[in-house]
Length: 342
Length: 277
Figure 1 (cartoon, rainbow over the protein chains, first blue to last red):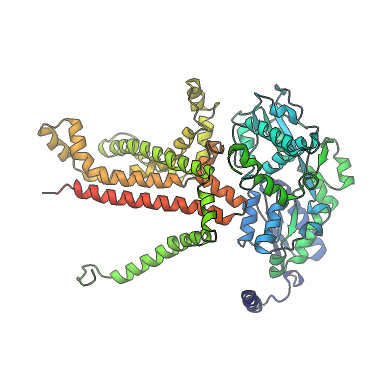
Figure 2: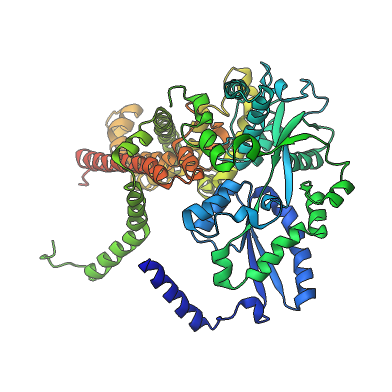
C-alpha cells in the first residue's frame, strides 16, 4: 500500500512537471499508440494501422501514429509485464493476456468480456499442409498417427501457435472418444511419436517443412497455411482441412495502466473498436484471418472452408486450465517424453 | 600492496572505476538473478534443477560445449599457426574470416548450418549417404557450438605465437630435436596457457549459446534439448524463479570451471615459463 502511495505521488509530480494533466488526445496533440503483437500479424496490422490513422485524422483533425512490435506471444507479454509501454496488446492466446493481470495488474481480470466475441475480433483454425498431390493420403487427424507418417509441429512449450495445434489434436481425440481423456492421451502420444523435430516457433516449423523438406504434414494456423501456399507456391503444397478443429481466438486488449498514464485511452479504445468495424473485418479477411462479422464472412465464404469447430473453453475450460494440465511442467506434454515425471 | 610506491599514477581512481563498471554491468544483474532464485524453497529448487529432464539438458549443454571447445582447441591452434607462420596470398582474408562467427547473428548462423546439414543440404546430403545424421542430433549441436567458438581459440593463441621467434625453433632443430619434440618441448609450453584460455572462453561461450543451437538441435526433450531452451520454456510459463534456478546452476558451474581453468593456466605458466636469458 505504502509503496503504491509513493508511486502515485511520484507519478503526480512527474505529470505536473510534464504539464500533461489533461489526456494527450484532449489537447489536440499528435498521439502515438503502441500495439504489442505476435509474429504472424505484421502484415494485417500494417494495413489496419494505416486505415485507422486515416479515419482518426478525418474525425478528430489530429495526427495519430501507431507503432508495432512483433515477437513470440509469450515473449511479448513478458516485455509488457516488465514495462514495455503497450497501449494495446494483440496476442496469440488469452493466457498471455491473463498474465498481464496476474503478474503486473495492468488490466482487470475480466478483460475478455469488455469487447465482443471474447475480445477476439478475428479467428483462425488449425489445418494441415501436405506436399503436392498428398502422397500420404492425409485426410483427417487419425491419419497423423499412422506409423510412418512424419508430422511437423513446433514445441508447445515455447510456441503459442503450437499450443493451439496440440489442443486441437487433443480436443478432437477426446470428443471422438466421448470425453475419454485416457484415449486422448494415447492419441497425442502416438501423434508425437511421429514428430521428428520440435522447432521453437511456428515460422521455424514452417521452414523445416517447406525448406528442409522434412515431414509429410505440417500442422499450422490457417492464416499461416494460406501464406505458405501463396508465397511458396501452390504447385508444391496443398491445404487439407480436417473434419473438425479448434476455433483459435487470438485476443486483443487495452492495457489500462499504460493508457491511463499516457492519456491515450480514447484513441486506444477506438483502435480496438475499429478491428470490429466492417473495414477492420475486411482487412482481417484479406490477411486470411476469419472475420467475426457475418456480412463480411459471407463475402469471403469461398476462401474459408466450413469446418466443425469446437472452442477451447468448452473442451478445456479456459486457457488457465489448459496451460496447467498440458503445458506447465509435469503437464501432459512433458509426460510424453519423461514417463517418470508425475 | 598500497604501501609500496607505484610507478604508475591513478591506481585508486582506475581501480574504483573498474569496480563500479564491473558492479553495474556484471555483478548487479547477476545478483538480481540469484535474488529471484531465492524466492524458491530448497525443495522447489532441487525439484527444478535435479529433474531428469533438466539433468539431461545440463549433460547435453556441458558435454557438447566441451567437445566443441576441444575441436576448436585443435583446429584453432592450426589456423593460428598457419596465419602466423606462413605468408600466402589471401592471408588477410582468412584472418578476417576467423572473426565472422563473432559478427554473424547467431540465429542466422543456426539457420545456415541447418540448411547445410539437413538431409537435402549440401553437406547433409552426402553425410546422410554415409549414414551420418548431423542436423537435429546432438552432433548438430556440437557443430553449431564449434562454429561460434572458433574465434576465441585463434585470437588468444595468435598473439602468443607471434611473440615466439622462429629462431627458437631453428635453435631446437640445430640442437637435434625432431619437429615433434620441438613442438611438444619448445612451442607447446609457451602457447599452452593461451591455448587453455582460448579453450575455456570457447567452452564458456558455448555453454550458454541459444540462438544458433535451437535451429539445428530439433529440441526433442531428453535427447536434443539444451539447458538454455529449458530456461526459455520456464519463462514461457511465467515461472521466473524456475528459470533463474536452472540458470543459476549453469552460472555456478561455469564460474567454477572458469576459475579452475584460470588457476590451471597460472600453474602451467609458472611451470613451463620460458625465461629469457
